[in-house]
Length: 262
Image (cartoon, rainbow, N blue to C red; front, side, top):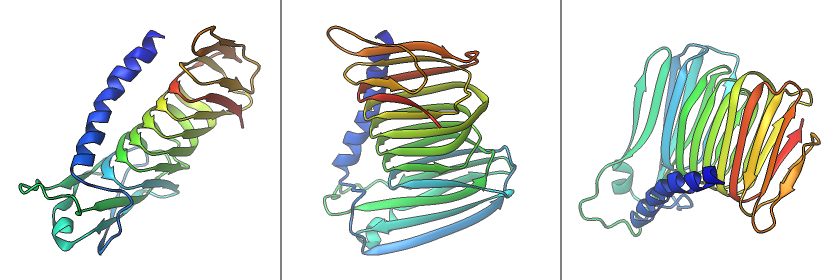
C-alpha cells in the first residue's frame, strides 16, 4: 500500500490548484454572456507531440487520417471584461504543439460573478503523442489516437479509445474508461485515481503483467486473475496474462478497478 500513500501525497498538490480555482470564482457551468471562437490549423508531423493545459472546460481530441492539427477553442465568459483577461498561449512547430489557457491577474480580486470556461476541440494525426494533457475542471475525451497518452485531471472524467501505446493517467475526482485496441506499442500502462472508478479494456489476446491495488474499492477482471480482499481494508490483484510483456500498474483509493476484455 506504500504506492497508494505516495499517490495521495502527490495528488494532494492538485487539490491546492482546485482550491485556488474556487477562490477565483471560476465555474465550468457558467452561463455565458460573451462567447468567442478561435480556430487554428497547422501542418504537423504524424508522430509529433502535443501538450495542453486548461483550467475550466472540456477537451476533446479526435484522430484523423491527416498531417495537420485543427484546433477550435470556444471561450465563454460572464462579461467582456472577463473575456479580455483570457488568452490562449500557443507554441508551435512542425512536430511540437503546446496550448495553454492563461488568465490575466485581477488586482481587484472581484471574481464572485466573473465566470468563464474554455473548451477545446482538436483534430490530430492518429499517431501523435499526447505528452501532457492537464485539466483542473473539465472532462477529457480522446478518440482514435494511437500514440502515447499522459494526462492529469483534478475534477472531470476521462474516456479514451484506440490506445496502443504507453499510457499514464493521474486523476482525483472522476471516472476513467480507457480502451486499448492493441498493446503493440505499449511498454507500460500506469493508471491512478483517488475518487472514481478505473475501467481498463484490453484485447482478449493481451500479453501483460498486472499489479492492482485499492484502499476501499472492489477489483474485478475478465481474465481469470486472482483477487485478494484484505481483512480490514483494500484489495489487490497480481497476475500475468499471456507472456506478460506489458507492465500495467493500477492504483485506486475510493473507487473500483475493472479490467475488461474487448
